[in-house]
Image (cartoon, rainbow, N blue to C red; front, top):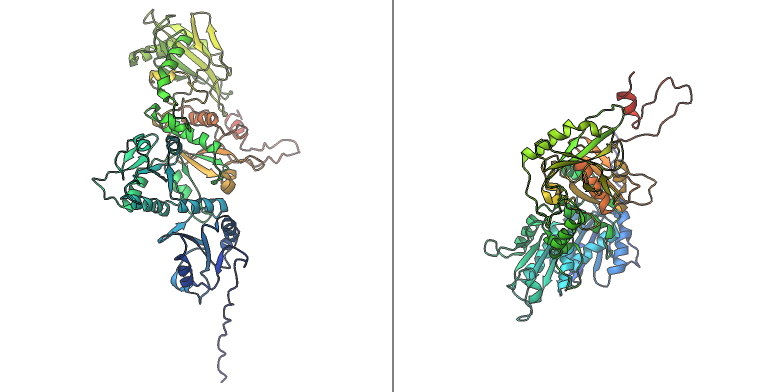
Length: 597
């Protein structure tokens, strides 16, 4: 009998260069890991790019790495290692689950794995952070600039006069590198102060003390007495206590639960903006973070205000010093005491065919035409607001005809006291998206009572119908509007704020309802998994602070006027006689719910 033929296996081809020979990247295409380690000994910063030559992501990232290397090769050593060839040392010693893998070393410290987007600008930004993990804060203006950033900041104070390196400095430096290792988004920035007077600005007196800056909550000083002063502990302390007002989401492109895990936490506002990490200034990002800071600023302290502005001038007065004067001027402007307490009232739906509600803000005024000398009003009690509601509902017929876009105010005397009366400012609310802030600056005059209600009254300032604190009703001191200040703590519909780079993740925006034809890649949507709804900000409106504020407020109020966004296909349009009505997302409600058939 003839013997069975042996299986013949073709040996793998010898690897070839992955990067061109003219590239600034050293290409170890035979997987010489020992030589890669040898090269690292002579360089301060080294980037290793581990690749598989057949891998699509490795091929796509090759160009990005070359671009970064062409800009930084004089300061950073770029080494590419083929980790797929079965005879190479890299394949035998490393066991990666995916390719490409980027590792960075700062002298002997490493590896720091880069897990961000495989885009040249993001890689370069991360490499630059590894190169200079500490920012040098030399003056008060640089300190304010550092503190004004939305990202959490950790500052260390060290006196460099006694020895070349003061005790604790190397530990602090290493903790900055540790944070990059644990937090690849690089959200915590580390700075070092050497000037005693600059350190005193943030209450740092002793050399070696470490300070964590927070915008809304109290800033912290590292507790040397309860925690050992080690790099890992400083990093852990900063990560655990940092304040995240707004988070970046960077899905890596593979299967992941990133979005699911975040959306499960509650309603989310997803903001898509084009972002270049290497740009010096980010005006759009500043707008968003300013809104986020106001939204989370629950104690309404003005202490955080100077941080919002990049104050380069050392003689700038503190923000809060101007508050009393502003309040005094406002008290002279309006001929009536500011509303001490108010309640939101929604009138019943009288026309089932109209898609509108009449929403009124009912306020109590305890003075009649008397000009107060200062804005100090005692808080009203529940009995008063209850009496006002009774009076209002008894006189409800006077508001039936209000179907207009302006805010109209009426006043009526109390049945309980001749010296107090109530004012109700009503407007018609469409279910479509609308901004509640009235653009009219006029003051509505009502002939019945000598009372003027100021026309920029904001009906949605107060998210839920309950007795409000008087100071909420002081009009905006700045044109930017601060009336969402602390709203996250005053509503049951608190939003988590997330940022996504529309240059990388625009496909997500399109899935949420962004226009594919939009040349401006700016978009915002609120996704509420629990309620199974999502709302889209009108793309005709520019993504600025006031637009976002209105969007957040309209979502937060009890009877939200936002219209739920539904995915829709273009209509087919039957050309024959319309015996069968075609139902689409846009006409479903009218055709199915409101039809009498």
